[in-house]
Length: 294
Image (cartoon, rainbow, N blue to C red; front, side, top):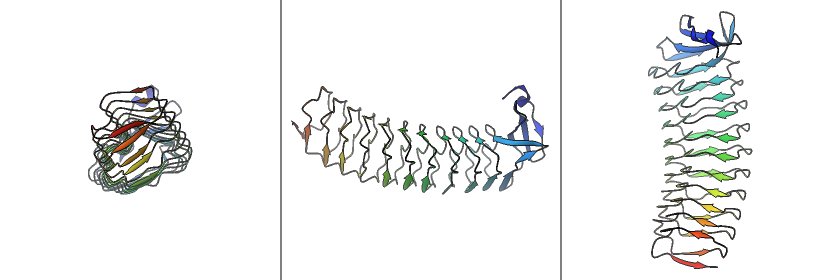
């Protein structure tokens, strides 16, 4: 955004600024009604962006419709719009910014357009009514905490081309009972599924090489897990307090088990370590777990 964007223009129900291309960015919505519609243009300028905090804490807002042509929902645009339960996004949307819909506690579902290329950090964090989400095929990356604290989220459909889940993507999603991970995924980062207490089983793709710190901590319904053949490292507290975990298969290529990786797994009675294991740190297992080398 250039210098012109610092000048707010009054369009009646909202203020807008102009970027260097002459496109309008909605900077502040003035109408406190329950419904809002952002048009495709204003004063002859195409609207391409909902700016930072444009609808910040509009507690009366229940429904928002964005016209075609809008490509970005900016940082915290709808932060804490706690009554918002209906969102219509355009087929031109490419970016959802950090915290864009964070704490929209009434939002039960949202249809994401196929044009979407990025969902940024904390975008839907704390959307406690969100029950399911289907992510479009164009996404290659899920950024940190995107769905953290979505306590009603039961299912999530991930795109086939996704290659990384960053930290805490589904952290605290206590209702998530099943999820299918795409084959191209190579890393599960820290706290990705921490506290997903309804998750009973998960199939890890064969391309996974690293399971990060606390990745599955406190997944108290998880009964078994087969670690893929290419995994070289299991991080600290990765499966800590998975109290129902009764069996785990560790691959031959595994080199490092970090501190307390399986600590608190009170149902895990025995485990076989791969012959080529290089490093096992302290308190990896409970004292009564029988550990043997293959």
